[in-house]
Image (tube, rainbow, N blue to C red; front, top):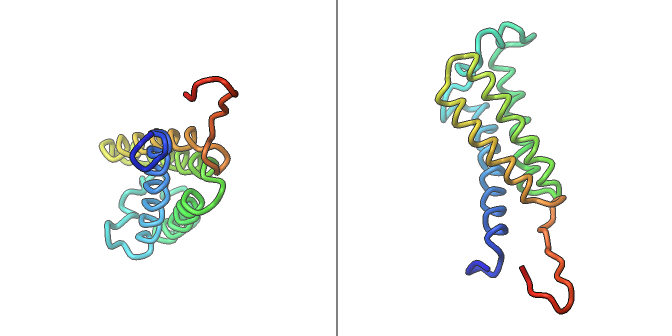
Length: 140
């Protein structure tokens, strides 16, 4: 048990849930303001040429998807599903970054994807997992 009365897994899960809820929401909102960075500069030119829209408009769509994914992780009972979506999304971003030559940022996104996969594994259909303890046995 940790000091808050939960298990270490619960603490890790809650922390990852906050991270993968808030970070996509903030990044998604910033796709509309570019306060943190001009996001469309990270869109690999070969990918940008395939798009039937401007890179700026594409980033707005990306922002909407990121906001929905973050809200899904943070505020819905489907944290596990949305954590998988965030993880796969981050891997897709990493592929784009590798194509664009941003290897250092791609590594960061791959590590974040692994962490989002961990959140998905620690989450059980949106509710905290509970371990069944048979009568007369010791708790794990």
